[in-house]
Image 1: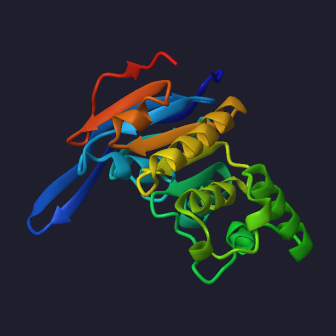
Image 2: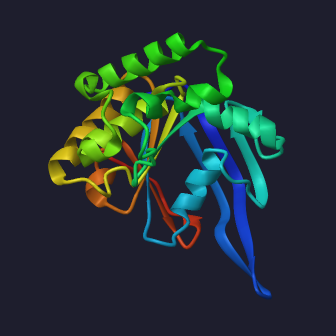
Image 3: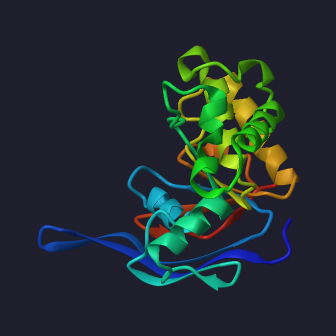
Length: 232
């Protein structure tokens, strides 16, 4: 377990204007996540869990409240500053993998390096290759997504999420498109990454997935429910 708060949310709200009405996706959410935690954010469809993940991952801004990341005020950062934090502190894994269909596994993993790192093509290649080897995909680097199983595609997506050495992995329904065997393999990877010191936040509606976490944060109607500590 970590030694201090990594993520601190204080009275975070997210409001949308729909016609003449205000609709709240989040209502004064207060939450802290320590460095090194393996936490699950759990809720039904429409509960606000994906909105909460998007705010934590700097993909969206709250309407109100304060968000601090490692003590730094995030809520008021400029767009380019938010993009830098998002790219360097977070790795994202999604249910649908989000891989480019006409791009090899190796090239998909290299993509985040093209935008921010001043690396040569050889250095990008070496880092992406190392990430794929770490995930057991040494023999699949030149394959396209259509040539990979769902579990292999998700491992490519995890390798891509790791390429910039993030301190936090945010995974939104990461096993939703996988069979039970691939699900277990992917969750074992997340647990191993957490054991290595990376903070992992799983967003899920599936209790079996939440059970992998040490802590379950439930959200309902945009509001946080009492915490649950899992015995693992």
